[in-house]
Image (cartoon, rainbow, N blue to C red; front, side):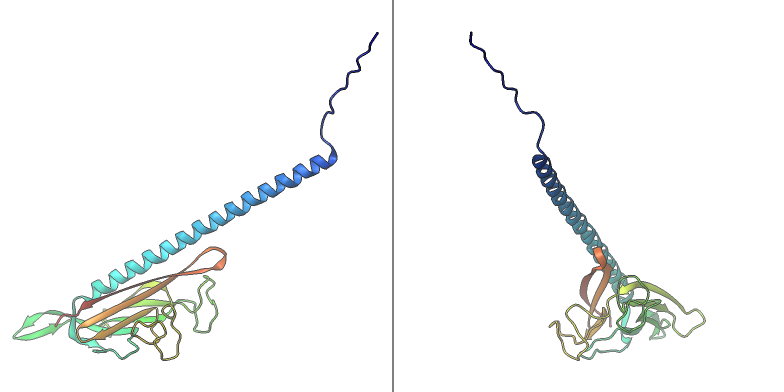
Length: 217
């Protein structure tokens, strides 16, 4: 009589196989986590860049809207040096009376340190930006009705690729320009603005905009 011996298959996993599976699974999960984190950081950076761009564009629109009615000879400084200027006093024509132009009270754009910030290379106010400026618009300077409004408190200290060395480092025709700069040649006024914001892990993003227009006579 022939006896057939049945061999049962081995059940379960060895310890080595279990450990190997854990290592592989951990590696896969780690890769997924890294990819997910990178994606989140990229999304945050894109959002920060978008916000800075929107702020810069809106600020540029406001500045141009205020200055488009500026009198050609009713501004100080009237013409710009190679540095341009971050401060401008101007008046608006109110009409003609008896053959003479009637001017409004003086208005002013001026770049100042942002609230809580000092010009010392340190983030004094803890917002992630260093030495940022505030663009302040003042109406009716020197009168009882004088009033000021801060249009933006995240203006860059200097324009991109520019350093304070009396040279035109970024090749745009203006030396040492601030994050807000007005440069006038003849009747053409150039407006340049750079706004900053904070991105992921303390990074700083910036957005620059510029335009030019002809000043009224």
